[in-house]
Image 1 (cartoon, rainbow, N blue to C red):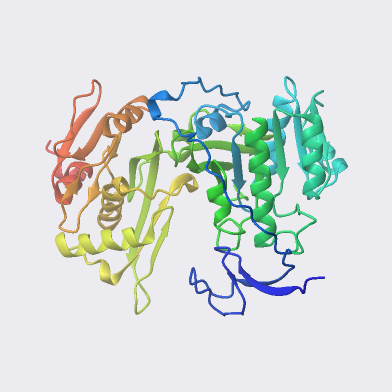
Image 2 (tube, helix red, strand yellow):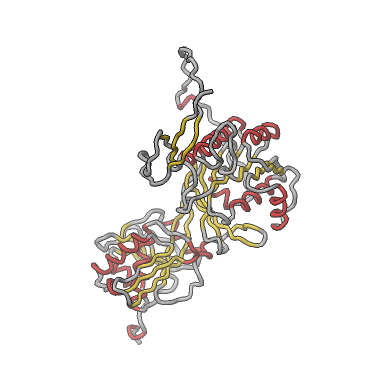
Length: 458
């Protein structure tokens, strides 16, 4: 018998080492090396490789084939996937525990099970538990939906070969294992080799495959980073699990646009689509000081979002800054621009900003809305009603251009807004919408804030 040797494998990057390090020399992460016992295979003689005929083809010689996509039963999920489920695709669905991954996939399987053969592999639950969950959600029992409570990946692949389903769901990849590997389920080698085996099977059989992935406490997908490179699409579930709405975001998509989002709402009957997500993130639209409305673009979808700001005197040696739904470093940058270019004494004030609805707005087009909301709260003023504010703020106090402006403005017009403050040079004419092009942050604040009663002429 060959002697077993000990390897130390990084759970972040998958690199292997013969000795232990507190910090991975490959990716630089701390405390990520796991001990594994590997049995080397016997050395075999390699035959001399014989020259093979050239099989590569020019791009123009490859025949065009129409890509057929099947609907998932959810228009929002189809949008995130790029128009539907592609045969032979491997989709990774990740999110925090209790966010709704298994619920959405079970609802999708129950819908598709009415017309095609679907296999749901519940590696973390028994078949009876999945049945009880489907009854709790009020689902009917589709004739072509099959359940398999199994963790051995070889048995799962045999069942897939025998059943030949059009769609299969593995819940989850961290719970299944390959018997020939000595590592424990969920380890780097098990996740990597298991996903690679499923990918080869899905491509060979042209079967659509969804796999559920766990996340770490930092919010990243558990397992090696190569897991995200193996799959075709990576979907993240976002949102507070104690709130009702959920966001499904495509972080990677080989068949559509990345950063596309779908909006769902969790109810007693499971997840339901939100047909008008802008109304969800718009708040109650009650005019209050420190409130501004922006139009953010997530992928190709414009979303009207209400921003709320609060500026108050501090009781601490260092003022507090809190950003909810807005990137923290960009918030600090906007506060510095307001103090340096406009003279607002924010270094002695606490400043808070939040995006309603729990949406994370990471794009720079929200900068001008944040700046107007902060100044409005500082002066205790209201923003002009039915006004949206779009623009990026530079360090010199200038307002920079943004992408997809016309798409944003048409979404605002559809929701009843009549005024738009935009960067200078991008103010195209749109019927029913009054455009205010501005060059600097000062001009945007003057155009956005409503005059006090004493300033209104009789």
